[in-house]
Image (cartoon, rainbow, N blue to C red; front, side, top):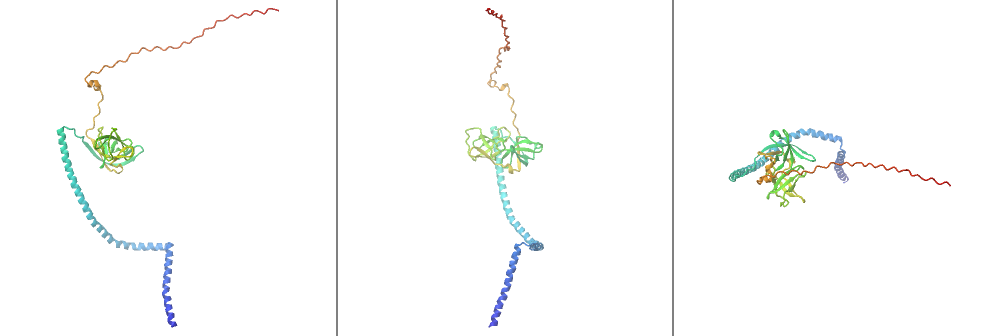
Length: 332
């Protein structure tokens, strides 16, 4: 009995001894790991360097498989986009046909009514090669100049709307003064109602609207286009919409100069004629059929009197008085 009990106890102790050794070894590993021993770092780097080629070779088939699966999925995406583009192209062709029909109808009506057609414009496509924001001027630099027949005052637009106008043209480059600049004043029209206004830049993203009529009635959200007054800018170019800032109406521009890349420079084929100098026939009397009155000669004024210089008055010499003789005192 005693021998059997001793064997059981011995068996239990021999079973518990390896567990204690494992716990102590794990604790030592944890302590060494927290200490960030350089030995472990070198072992880790050596291990990662040694297995890196094998991992690359093993992962290469999986990478090619994932690309093939991704490309197979993109086939359906490209197919759907292609179908959408075909539908949009078909709709654009329909609208192009409608626009051509309407343009032909407008041309016939103008011939019947002897109406003056809108002035034709020439367009030059240019690229924005620079932007400059100074304290008193905000500009864009384009890669087209006098060699491309670019002239100061011409309108510059992009796909969204009006950007500004050319104010300086070099041989191969030109500078655009933006609609938001302090020096920009563009005549515009608020539709509907044909409300005339002047869009004045004040270095904010929404230029100020100054109305020519004090009784102008407009609402926020009405579209704004160029009026063409002055004959430099074409009429009807989209500018923006009217917004109310709490004090004044402003123009929220459609185009953003900071993101524009390709722009178009619009030039009128028939520039406005210079105003002739006024002559005598432009007088109201001549226009009414009466002969102009002879100019009234200026009144003859009396010759000016010569200026008299005051003469100095010389004082007269006083008369010399005879000396007064005193009687001698009587002798006592």
